[in-house]
Length: 250
Length: 339
Image 1 (cartoon, each protein chain N blue to C red):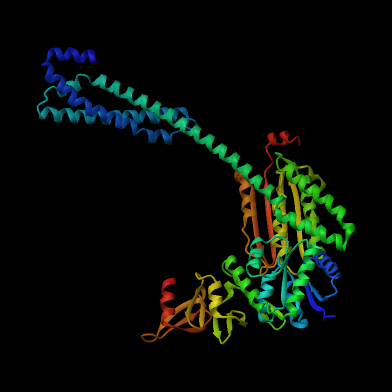
Image 2: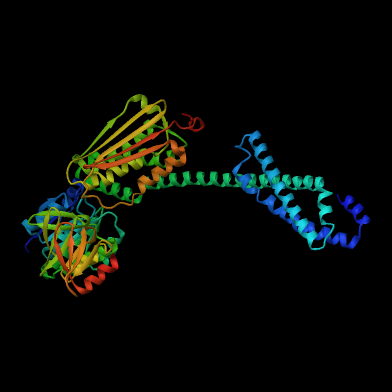
């Protein structure tokens, strides 16, 4: 007898959770440790319970399934996405060899999924890389980010792009400055720059991205030393290439 | 006039005389043509169907007198110029026949005015027909869109999925829901084509839709209705409420993690209809939508009621409110729909 697979079910519809639980109860290998009705709770539950497998609904209020996966980052368990209709997402799963279920879930298909997941977990095949690659795919299709999600211990903050004053890089983290305070997120500045609207955000330095709506003036202190003063009272150094980028935008 | 010219020609040296007449009259009458054609702008400014007859006659008459006066003056100048260059008959040709020139000029001018009005009338009629057709086409296409939204595959997916879930968790809820879904679909398919329906029918349709959605969202969605029984007999457009209610679900309850509500208020006053739909929403939970629902409704109201329909909406503090105020439907449409 192998150890049971600790499993989490995430879906905003009570009936959907009940139905999936019923179907999974036929598989003794699956041990359901918790169920969540929204993305926020799911992030918390994964942190606390550390399940090996998550059945994750995509269409949920506030945080969708992709955003939950993004917030879990490196800690993400093996994820099986569950969706009723989402053609472009299905394309992304196919591209990255990820398993997914269509609603309503057919018992045969679920059995295949459980078998595949057991195999994967038994072989200790990490799946984070495929899952992150799939997220990159999805992001590319969704266009510019309109908000950034930040995990703060068990809690989740949603920061609208318009509220971001500037983002500074520090090692593998970024510091996001907002009028209400700073947030720290594990992310590369380059990736954020790619996904935010280039009309609104400008990389003025290797380690700094600013929101042009907050720019108040540029101070020149010598041939190559310039500072961007922001309306929030903060100042950031501008590199030479950052200055030419700024001039293009303004 | 040609007879007089012949008489004069016999009295003078004929070839020289004809040459003078040719050189003098050809450019001058061309000028008359140009003057007359430019009257088209005046005709555009004074449309036949909306200008009072007296004013029209006065203005056009005055314009005719001024134009012909200018033309005669130009003719006089031209003839004197010709006389200096050796065409000695030019002055006599103009002065001797002045009355004829005036009459003839006025006649040409008058004919052109009539031509202009005929031409303008024809193009206007064409434009009117095209506009009417365009309007009808737009009403049809907007109605088709609202119909398509109703039998949208997403809605079908969600509903089937919900029935499958209920079969596992609450089988006794399936039958009443199937009845409501059938009613909902039947109304969308059949009533969307009707020229008019009652507010009561519209409300029932919205209630059927909301019942299905409520089964999905469960206890966290509260729905309130506020209307008087007298309001329900009032005539209105089919599928008026549905897009508003669909919006309220999508961007309201669909954006919130916790308790959500939708309030629907109907009121009528002498066949004027007021619809208010309010819903709670989470500003951070909103995914940017296409905004189709609202703009389609706006266009549809405009196509049916022109500028008399009012649609206002505002979002503040987690409350979205949309209000529509409609004038009475044309009696012809109510008759056609047997209301």
